[in-house]
Length: 276
Length: 207
Image (cartoon, rainbow over all chains, first blue to last red; front, side, top):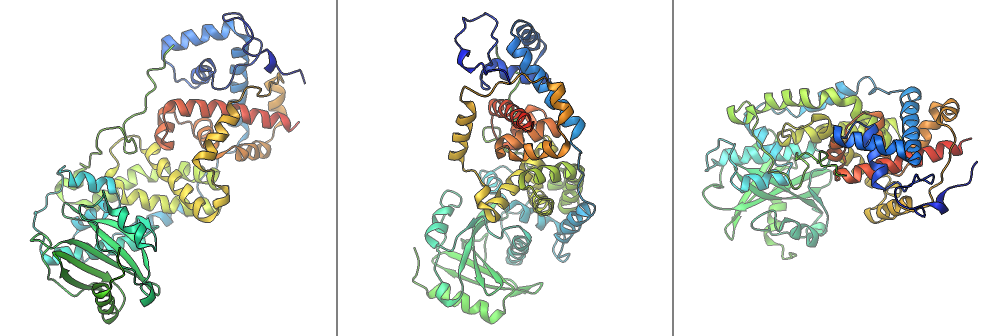
């Protein structure tokens, strides 16, 4: 193996052919790579080609890169996705179509809840939803059930994962106009899982997620104004709903735990003083 | 010499681009779900092979890669309306990449290099004194087999590995790589140069 040229690096006067190897973050080196990758416009490509003709180190760099690219292209087998992966994806996506009982436009709102950025756009007044500013109670309930179902199918049911209310509450600051009341119910066997932002109509709302054994409870808090009128069904598609209003805030608890347990949860939440 | 033509495209993942536009045909006419499925089929499904290969390079395991691609597909479906009509492959691969790193953090925290560590890695590989070797590339090519090549790529630090994989295996251009890996084009360029040099060094050491 020939000796390395590192010691000579940079010691030659500028403009003279360099036999030593320029550093990898040297812009002339980056441009040689970009040249070989077809990323340069004609003027820059010409200039780099001329430079390579004058500087053997750059010409060598180009030869090495070409050799590597050929090696990868010729030797490395190109793998395809295993058979069945596409079918599994399609069947998983297909299931998110359920339940059929809800009108299709609701799902698109549920999908929005996946993204805080999107919620922010909605809040800022970008209009694309043709929605009445006033939600009927039954619509709010159905939207919240849809959000709950969707969250169960997602990799994570929450956007912020934490059993610590001191982490969850501040997370909502800046995302939601009014950070929700967050209480610790772990000693009552309703541990906090985390929080996420759901969207009802055009309004991002805070949803806390608690756990009961293997079931999740989504608790959504929103300003109790006309847009979030209280009322509506106590259960939709097997999901129980408990709602109440407190200090101008409307709460909806949605879960597949039994109605009685959900009532217990609501009662504990309302009376708990373990809050931030 | 400037490289002005190379500028990342403002897209769904660009923090300095215009606000994400949410207008899709379905959003206007209320046929939401049907269109979500149609968009998903045309944006995501054609790129499952690339998604799987990237996930496999990042997780180093076929089964894990399948899990990652399934989760990433679901995330893509949930976010399909934030897809702003940019490059579908780069958009999907950025989701796959983020899903893979979340998965690694959760399941194999030891393999994750933190941002601080990464800066150290980049400094390390930017140091002068990188070995020079004039072994003709022809003889290198004659010796290396597929398994040696695969193993050497797998040893690259993740940021270098993903950049090299996206360019030299998947054939993405710099702009797409910048979008998929959420870094500026300049970073793509320096990572790519370092990845290739480092890979060549490792292959030569196989001798």
